[in-house]
Amino acid sequence: MADHVDLVLEQWRERRPDLDATPMGVIGRMSRLGALFDAELRRNFAKHDLDRASFDVLATLRRSNAEHSLTPAGLMHSSMVTSGAISQRLDRLEARGLVTRAPSETDRRGVLVTLTDAGLQLIDKVLPTHVDTEQQLLAGLSAAEQEQLAGLLRSLLESLGDKRD
Amino acid sequence: MADHVDLVLEQWRERRPDLDATPMGVIGRMSRLGALFDAELRRNFAKHDLDRASFDVLATLRRSNAEHSLTPAGLMHSSMVTSGAISQRLDRLEARGLVTRAPSETDRRGVLVTLTDAGLQLIDKVLPTHVDTEQQLLAGLSAAEQEQLAGLLRSLLESLGDKRD
DNA sequence: ACAAAGTATCTCACCGCTAAGCAACTTTCA
DNA sequence: TGAAAGTTGCTTAGCGGTGAGATACTTTGT
Image 1 (cartoon, rainbow over the protein chains, first blue to last red):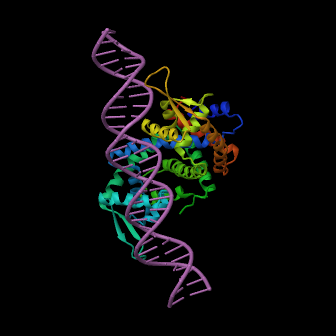
Image 2 (tube, each protein chain N blue to C red):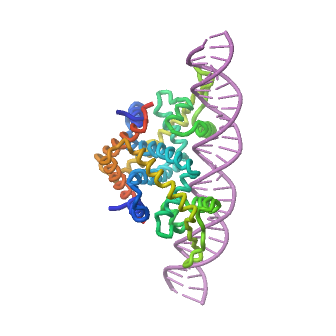
Image 3 (cartoon, protein in one colour):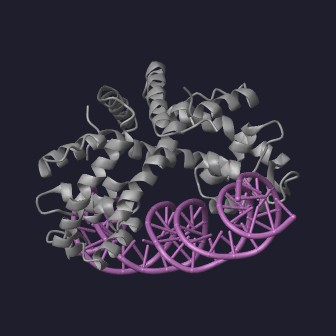
């Protein structure tokens, strides 16, 4: 039982025995899994003429409230990208007619982004295939192990200040 | 005890109760942790005039063998990026005098990338600060929990075909 | 021996993100 | 109330990655 990271850790023990590389056992593996997950999810998005960035915005709007609307700032916090990235994502989605931008009624600086009918239809079509893909990616772990893993990851996120909002 | 992903899962239950979003409890958290880790590690790299891509190449060469050398293909497999990305990374590192490219002695298509003295000195200076940063990122979990987490991640990587080589 | 298939590396057009900076607006507080 | 500080969303230059394609070389199979 050994993955690529086990090899990396062995190599560090050989070349730099003074270095305690154990944290790489977690962080290195998360990085590799992230890359593998991303590649697989991207494949599914591509089938529906989408990319990760667009899916992310559409899905966030879909789940946010009954009107499927949110401010760019709200999208930014949820997505963990910069405000510039959100502006560009919205430009693309607006050009495709999947979202609309309207001036906020309460704050003249603000903008309200809303899913169009076409956007709603698209995300509702893609969502089931997305969770399906995710489930397949996790199929190597039992349900109990998946739960255990989720718990550890939550602890870690909380310790790093990840909040509900 | 709740992180941002708990909120996301609640929202899905509210808006799409038909959808079983549990896999997001793992994949969503890994994605968020990846972003947080990346930001913090990047901060450390920047202190030493480095970025993730350059560190990745230098560290891979450092641990690979006593000569600190590897082919571009080897670097590519270890880094999980495309060959084009490796070529460009090597261009940058070569321009800074941190690695050299020499023709392979056994295969005239091949190239052997080797750490220069400057490259070796730089990576050896940065490495301890890097594992230190990683350790701090994981400090929210006990040693036993970190081990447990590493084990689950390894199982997952193995199930997805991640091999030692 | 030779053609076909495979491999190693590089080039380049394009794409999305960051970081810095800006303009417009709102909040705070003396 | 007015000035300072903060917030919101956008623009843009630059960067690093992808994906497609090219070149040069090696391996395979007859």
